[in-house]
Image 1 (cartoon, helix red, strand yellow):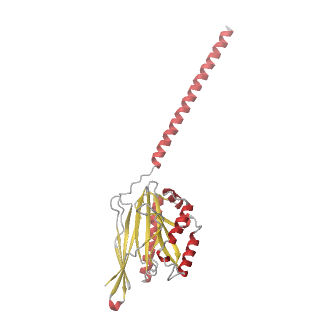
Image 2 (cartoon, one colour):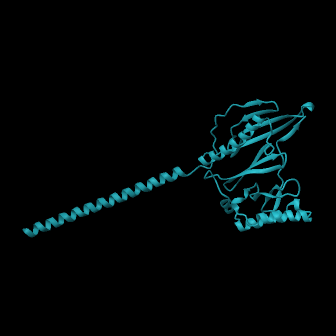
Image 3 (cartoon, one colour):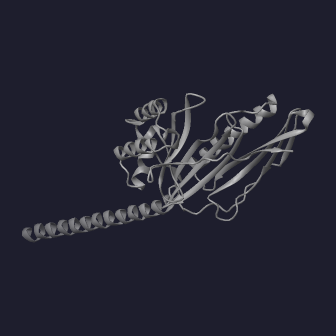
Length: 296
């Protein structure tokens, strides 16, 4: 009788152990499925859309500021359908120069915005807009043009998911030059550094330096190769011989070629001048003056 009782207790304890173990395994499996489901949900939420925004913004009112020497007109625009970059603000500045001859000079600023929605893109757009709004405000306040940025236009290129926005200032003293470039990963909606850009075009940093030096050697301004020009060319080559990728202005053009904006030693005028080169062809790119004209 005593043996039967003990055997019954052992069997009962074994049953309890099996039930507890079964419950534990069920709970563990249930929690795992919940975590996996949660991970899937978070992944979906974090995946950005590469499509440009199509939602129109509420625009400021267009306005005209009429000063003693300058008439400044501001016109705001929303993007057209699927534009990755668009002219948000067009500023036309008319300078009343040579009053007796009634000559008027016109300068135009095409101020772009990137048509993607993210915190980082918002920051870039704000940086672009504030820079040129400040320039225009100073023109209006001082009734004097900024000779380093008398006009602005831009170009942009899309290659393999990378957007390159190139800002070009026109300056009376030095022609036109690259003032700023932005390289954007469209899918991630964020700016990428030059190291990432080099990966996209399969160029190493060592190759980059070699290509820049070759492009400097091919610059038209150094072609006569007299002693002075040869000396200026050599100084420019030495400047870029060991420079890092982060110190160079880079972008990808419409041919999917890597391009660089350089500051090289000049052969006339000031000590330095601007040059833009295509690093695939290893030749210079002509940057045209634009958005400035004399109105008779």
